Image (tube, rainbow, N blue to C red; front, side):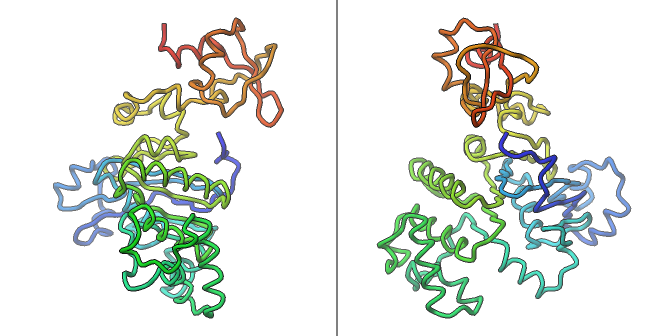
Length: 343
């Protein structure tokens, strides 16, 4: 596990948030029975876009919010940035209650701390790549030299160097998406919201964009909330995954824990066709009390990548290390169960 959410200070912290659509939602929610279901609320003429969600996102973490269409994932992230005003609960960004901000304060927060990328590229068709990327800096009132310099920097970062004077119509879908990512990075946000940014791309380009995105995150270490309906994409990108259904979070945990220990039948359905050995890492199987001998394996190695060694190894307990320090040992039998299926 890359991030320890129990010790990290949250960048985004939401407590018991509700977003209810309908006539007089605040009054309805105040009088509502605690156990009212999504369907019951719908019968009353209300839609619970977000239902009683409490969640922290820590600095440098990539939280992937996933679920099927209508699950509430996009509504939740729009609440984080206050594109939607919540019906009840609280949301803090860096300890500041965003519901208490004035319109000017909210605009300043978005301009200084938040970058957003949506499924539709939203590029300005009559502006070049350079002009599109520099546009948010122009809105900030920065001078032409400063915004050109910053725009060129992020264009290089996303691999579009040499296409600065192209227009959006002259670019492929993947290249247009890179322009959208570069534009959101131009303001140097601390927090990055991405709402299904790759879903309009074909599978090969989508995979390339995921690779590019992971490279950028390795360089920049942003705090990211990434929305997808694709479980494979979530497993590949996430430090933690929050799976939503009917506006509520069914489970929020690391990819390997969700695959190994799904909390509900709904979550379990997502994991049934997944090759667990490609998701579960050696660190998950470590018992710090156990001791073993021989060459240790890397904590971040997947069980799949260790397959040949596991099949040919005679040790019952295999040491696991991170950054040269032995964390404990994993059971070879437990690792083989994940690789081959339980006996």
